[in-house]
Length: 183
Ligand SMILES: CC(C)(COP(=O)(O)OP(=O)(O)OC[C@H]1O[C@@H](n2cnc3c(N)ncnc32)[C@H](O)[C@@H]1OP(=O)(O)O)[C@@H](O)C(=O)NCCC(=O)NCCS
Image 1 (cartoon, rainbow, N blue to C red):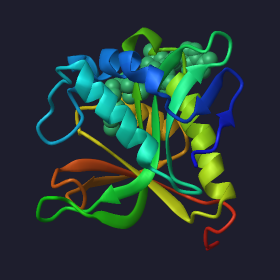
Image 2: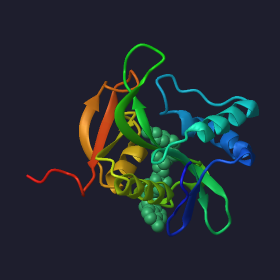
Image 3: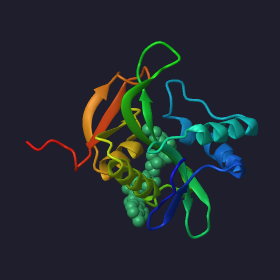
Image 4: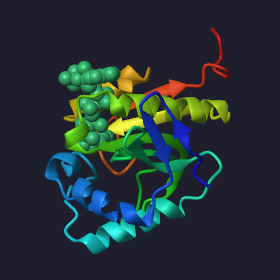
């Protein structure tokens, strides 16, 4: 069950069937999709959005989750926050690795407000409180906005890797401060 998480301005909650219109509006935009996946493409029908919401709801795990990020003041959905095993490179269909990734997809109407950073920080806190030792993030090398979010939430840039998603990605990592080995 995806646990609700509250921040100063946001409520991260499980996806609801009624979020399909928002999901369609979000993922049908090229500015949102252009750096996602090896062959980026936009969502083309509302039925795909209904299926996507169902897939989001299916991730049932005590720590991992795919959250609908909403504004607490008016309940408006603003984006997606993900914490889940990252697919290892290899033969399709890609299989999850042992590493856990954090990711974010926000609606352009809500960029430039610090919402992605605020939501991602809270999910990292949740991950580390639950005892995860480390969390990774990968971005398309051209996705500077996403790399900035990684840095804002304290992730370290480790250079490029082809370990995940069958793609050359910028790799970021943050260790759980409670369990990180001290030098
Ligand atoms: C990646 C993405 C989430 C970044 O969104 P964002 O709004 O730029 O990121 P943040 O939430 O960290 O907001 C930071 C911006 O808000 C501004 N801001 C305004 N109020 C703020 C506040 N209270 N707190 C923090 N930042 C604030 C910052 O100055 C910064 O602006 P700048 O980019 O002009 O310097 C967004 O571009 C996106 O969803 N892209 C499409 C999907 C995607 O590519 N996802 C990543 C795949 S790896």
